[in-house]
Image (cartoon, rainbow, N blue to C red; front, top):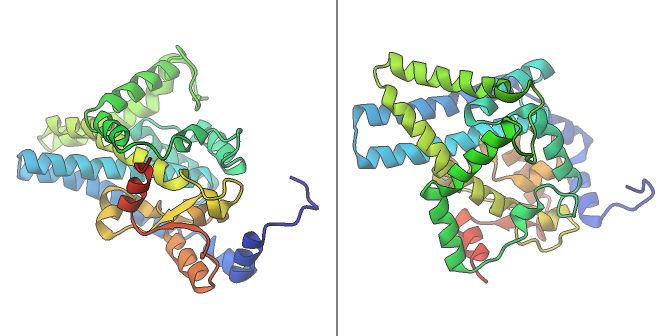
Length: 314
């Protein structure tokens, strides 16, 4: 970027609205908050397992699948935050936790994800954006969106993702995010070990079959919430060349935060403005920017239903 170029007026306004001292405060990591969020996510996952163990039935199973899928996205958010060094203050601990307690259990990997994701931030809504294909198709027809949702909930999307990830990890094909550790089956050791621990804990509790909830959620509800996240964050821009016009914040209700938008992922504009702000400070950043009146022309949706309605408005 040309160092002599004049920043856009919207960028000047939000930086002036916050000021250097508040930016530093917003970016300050409080490790206990991250540990608490991580513990809460895993507690919700095992709480969903317990729900089915205590009250087995169709309703409890469906509820557990949607809770677990939402928390699997929550773990992906922790991997995402760790990729920005915005999870734990110690870099080595940040990366270890980001992988072993967040990424590996959901078949992710922080190490190759970091450079991939930083390219997205550097080139948002340009031809160099590796996530551009996730946002460009919208809006689409309502019937098309319904078919996508059905493919997610029926496991078709998840199965396709599983096959592609498996082939990528065994070096049978190339994906957007290539693992850098080992070769062949060695690339699966983190996934195998962490999922083995989950299965072992359920086995010790006397309910090994509950592990199927983890797999089914990954194949179904996790696919759906990932799609909703992708649509909400960058689709249907008002100005592809501006962060305020190509990145959306969605004001999530309490139930949306449980099932669709875990760990403050809905404050995506704020995250793009300051990548190192930890998830628990994003609501305060949003409130401050709103108080200062700099979000008037920004992409801010009142809820996820409104975003999906717009996505299906063609």
